[in-house]
Image 1 (cartoon, rainbow, N blue to C red):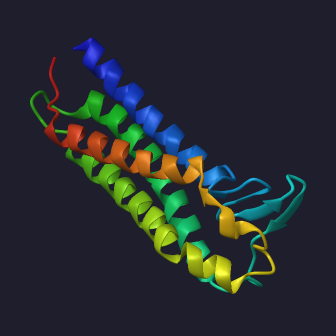
Image 2 (image 1 turned 120 degrees about the horizontal axis):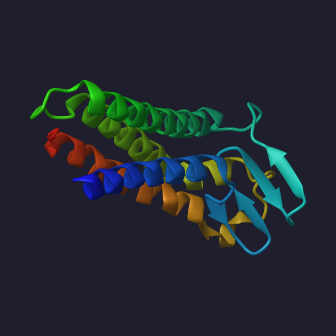
Image 3 (image 1 turned 90 degrees about the vertical axis):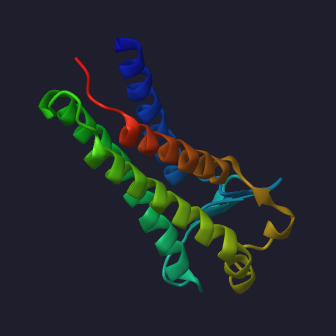
Length: 167
């Protein structure tokens, strides 16, 4: 039982770390001489431009930013609630509250990655002066980590839903 508990805790912490890295790191769209994410655009590894309200489709990027941040926060809250429920739940009860919050985190990261997937081309086309060399790019590891975090938070949320407290 202790091994299962350690695995669940490690899996949850890994999910939170993936969400944090995907949110913060600057690699949602990468190429040979640039990298871009939902926070800034860097060309030649030195010239960085912070994304602000002068960008067209800025509200789209804000939606991605907000849902990724919310997802990370919800994942951390779910972990703390899980720890509290370990000590407060009666034997045989399920970790439903933890599951609901973790699945909400899953939903938020899915929304963020889906918005970016759908709107990326429009964002780059409408802001050509900020994205001059991004046509030849591809999705970066932060974007991929966001989708991996989606899968991890979904699996984790389902585990908490099925899991019952034992002695």
